[in-house]
Image (cartoon, rainbow, N blue to C red; front, side):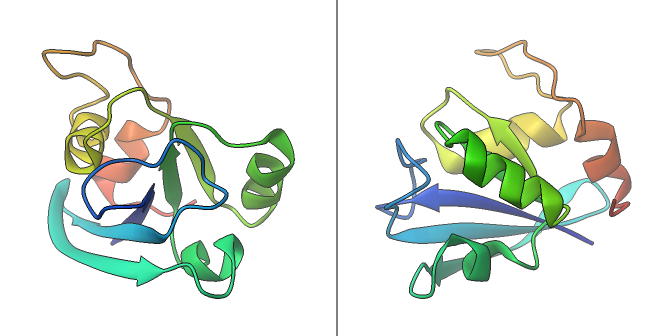
Length: 116
């Protein structure tokens, strides 16, 4: 099982900035598909909210935060889409959707369910 976190302010769209987002949408991935969804408030900071996740999909993330996440074994993926679930689906589809042909470096790892 793999968990992907997405910062959001409204529970549907990716926040413009990781810092200051109201909550995280947590997607549990099994066998390359979304198995479960949850919302997690960012009440004790970013690291506490995503500590059990493997990947965070963001629109913008300051380099020091990205480096801190990496030290904890959490990958940061920058995404231009606004819709959180479409971004997760795009990652699971090898980074490709009709709107975006970008390939993500760790989509194969996520689809295989292997944690780093």
